[in-house]
Image (tube, rainbow over all chains, first blue to last red):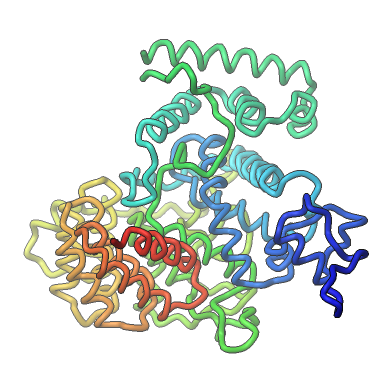
Length: 212
Length: 277
């Protein structure tokens, strides 16, 4: 704001920017004319601001836990891998350039963390994991019980699929990745991805039909 | 199982509950705190708030492990916690894992909430020595035996009972630790664990409230004080006492500024305020 009370015509941010990005622009933190706006909180967390990092992680945790559960069998490792995934997110936050949504970026980081863990575990068969306890739905945060239950059951059906089909299904349907993107991510040919999707979905639909 | 026709088999990812099992807020806060600690962002101090050494960390890894064990009852996490308690291990410094820290298969720094299983020997390789250990005694046998037991043994068995979903038996074992070894370090996490079981699985929020309060009174600034305060708030909520719940949340925020539980506590306070007539 100029001293005459009028907006600075050079610094006035476009109306499409979020309020947070507007603050960043006014503060000179974001060159919005040359790069996409990035949530101020993300920038602060990347700089080591504990409060912003804690707030960001707390907000991301439910999504991250859900993604991990989609990718691994059972509940035992979900929290450990969610922790590992969030740590990878925090460590790599300074590399997020605002291209695409933060959630999509986080999803990719977490997925890669899980895949790396599963690959390491292939060579360590003794790591059976600790059998955890399925907790009842906690009080509060009232989730529609039918949605929650159906998602839990879907994860249980995914547990029956081979990992290659499961991961292709999750990357495509849950994360919205295209076949070429999945092909790059998993380092397999596109035709292999399509085959895994086809076979995996066929098995999933068959199991869903059996459950009815 | 039936799926509604208007709901996709695999919906796009979101933060709504499912498919990951829901966890109590204290558990979620413990995960966030552990990540922050591993990243070098310990509890905020009066200074910059950015952890530079172990002495500035308000909560150490074993405390988080104990907190995690309260909620999930993972035997290894509580083992790590009371190992610190009983052996008086110093607060770990950054980059220098303590001698008793459980190994992690990933090799990453920091402590996992659940300890990694030890790596198996390579194919064809035999361990240098094969120790023959007696079969572990069952928790039932210990529970029924009048023979005195060490508090760490009772705590371990309580965790095993909890892992086996034997809520009542686990709670009784935790209470036994508290009753027989009230002055021992193990009594504190045992009290919190028993309280959590009463609240979450045994339908006894009043009993849970007494135990959370007892733990907080015993150690107002203890390593599980945050969990105890959150537990008190949850008990009041279960009892339908909105005023007491709000007071408990305000005390939590005042006592633990900057904790990962803060945003949720504030959100719940706003929700309670909006419900006032």
